[in-house]
Image 1 (cartoon, rainbow, N blue to C red):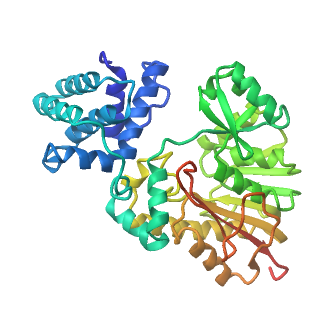
Image 2 (cartoon, rainbow, N blue to C red):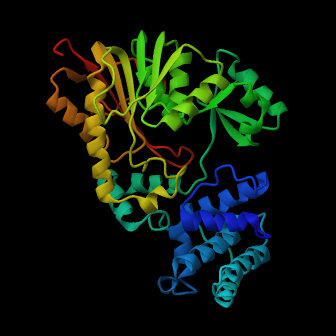
Image 3 (cartoon, rainbow, N blue to C red):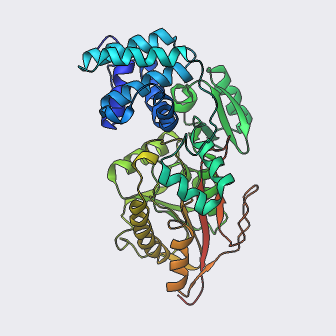
Length: 417
């Protein structure tokens, strides 16, 4: 490892698109800086490129050079704790180690540093998103809402915690975390982390809380409005919604996912939370389900494009393609059909995706409603602060301060089945 492991790791992340995982050669501080730089570059790449084009012809450079210049510019513009000279020198040293043009890196970044602070985005769409996605969001949602999405995508994601109500209460958890160096404040029914790392606390190891975003929490809250006699969470990993359903009083609960490794993560989280009496199985709902038991409530949080959670996963906006959205929608329609076959007469199915693309949400549900006369939109007692749109579907819109976007639909099965 080089003498600058954080920047070396960030450069590797950008070049390979890999994860830090549990690299033993990185300290906690180096891992945090590597993640901050790499995620920041991905989040602000469009704006960084606009800034860099004032000083260099980016299109003439190879990918490694572009990533290196973006890394330096991000540190200069966004990381106050990193002096400009350290950002420039670090980038030049990286260029030297990777046989890149050190003179060009030095000259461009010195011009960036001397040109003054980056102005706030004038056009958040142009400075946040690839062109095709910006055009798509304007077409589907209108310019104002599309700009709100784009601004939310530029924010660092918030971390939210839900208390394990079998072991503690919310106010007690907040106080306990405070004594362990983590400051939180209430955001709806969840604790939002302000400072500190809750995943390194004794409270985490003791199972006093689990991590779940506000939109995921709301989706699980919809499922908890259904009959809880026999409940199935089809895509349960990493386990937040499954835990919420257990704490909500599900009497018999089955969690499943298509990957064994992901189900092992679910099991670890349940054990940490000291929750027992759940059945865990590996099942792929793109195939015929491996069981026939009629469930009173089914939750299908289907794999999707992830375009509603770009703040958490900024690389998605650079990897996504229009045809990929259509492929996701085809798989989602199959999964929804199979999941609905497991719902008992009078039972509830919640279908959700972390995307607001119409093909993955309303159009998937509309296809099931056309093909299955037993499927109808359910009228449920929805949770506080969650209301359906005029078409009966639930949408959680990204905006500054609330980064996640979700679609959800509540369906019931009539006796025609």
